[in-house]
Image 1 (cartoon, rainbow, N blue to C red):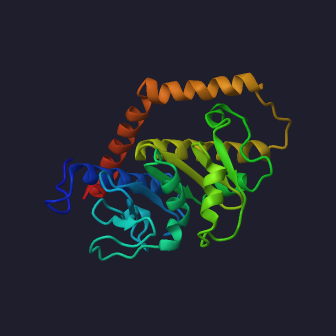
Image 2: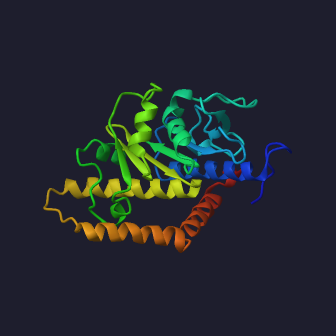
Length: 253
């Protein structure tokens, strides 16, 4: 379903990015990964260095549309005449990642029950199952420093993320980065699922079996091939969009 952009001078690329990010918010809400009006997903504005899109502060994620997203600069200040508020403090973590990782078009941060539980364990995410093995050797770990209001923390977040696809934020939550909204969402969906499975597995109080290291590394490489070489990522994203269009296509407006 095609919808016109906000203004005649908005590029088609920006409008598509808005639609994808609005879809991401709606999907996170559908899969129960929200924290009321808190935490954020952000994405770069194509062709506008140092400009990003973020959710309007105070909106439930089920309410977010392409046109309601707010354009901000690297310091979290609004760009343009949007009537909506933003939460600059909430952009501290995202800005750090966007500034350091030019491949990080999209950054997603969540405070889910399972994600916060696993992030509070000393061992973090364990290679307990096939889903978790997607992240073997691909997750950074950042120690908790309090609510992310201190800009000095940016450097440490960047160092701990390195070249990884995501972070376990100790005692805090989960973060994923992607070259597209689709990639960042894919990573968050499965990272959350891996955390849920770990919580369930450890709750059984039985002896656990971990695959050998060479198998863990093999499976991680297999996921990369399926998602990117075989085009599964786009197939999956298209399926998500069909789901949203069936439920409520207003995210496109």
